[in-house]
Amino acid sequence: MSKRIRKMSGGLKGKLAVALIAVALLSIAFCLVIWMFFKKYNSEKEYLTRITELENLLSQKTEYETDNTIKEEKETIKVEKVRETEYGFISLASNISEGDYVDIRIRYIDGSDYITASHKKIIAIDRERGSVIIPVTEEELLLLDSAEHDKILYTGTKVYLTKYYNSDENISIVNYSPSLNIKNLIKTNPNINEISIVINDSERDGLEEKLLSYNEEYTRDEVEVTEDYNGPVSGLPEEYGGSIWD
Image (cartoon, rainbow, N blue to C red):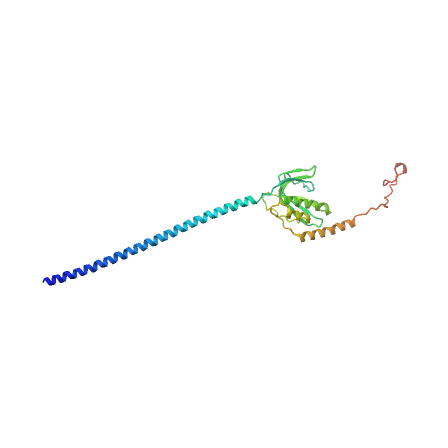
C-alpha cells in the first residue's frame, strides 16, 4: 500500500514538474512576444518621428531657399520706370479724350499697319498744338522715336491712335519692327530690363526695301522745276507790274 502511495506521489511530482516547465516556457514565449511587439512599436515610432523631423527640416530649408530666392530676385530685378512724354507727330482723332486707353499705330503708304505701343493711357491732350502726353517705358520711347523717324523718312506714313472701347478688353500685342539703329539701342540699353518686342531683321529689311521703291516712284512723278523755267505771262500791263512770275 505504501509503495503504491509513493508511486502515485512520484507520478504527481513528475506531472507537476512538467506542468511547471510548460508554464515557464509559455511565460518565456509570452514575454518574448511582448518584447518583440514593443521593439517593433518603438522602431516604428522612431521611424515616424525621424520622418517627421526630416519633413520639417526639408520644409524649413525649402522656405528658406524660397525666401532667399524671392529676396535675390527683388534685389536683382529693377522695376522698369514709366515716364510721361509729350508727342507732337501723332495724328489726333476727334474721338480721343484724356483718360482714354489707346494703341499707337503706324500706317505706311503701301497699306501695311503696325502697333508701336499698346494700351497706353492718355494723360493730356493739347489740340491747338496737336500734341498728346502719354506714359511710356524706355523701350516704348525708342519705338516711338523710330516711328517718328519713319514718318519723316517715308512719304505717306501716318502715326495715329486707336481707342479701346473698354479699358479692360483684350490688349493688343506690339508688332512694329523698328529701324536697325533703334534695335541696337534697345538691345544695349541698360534701362530696359526685358525686351518685349520680337526683333525681326528680315521683316524690317523687306519693309524698308518696299518703302524706298514707293519713295522713288513718288519722286519720279513730281514735277521738276529748273532754273531755265519761265512761268506763264499774266497779261497785266507793264504799269501794274507785268508778269506775276517776275
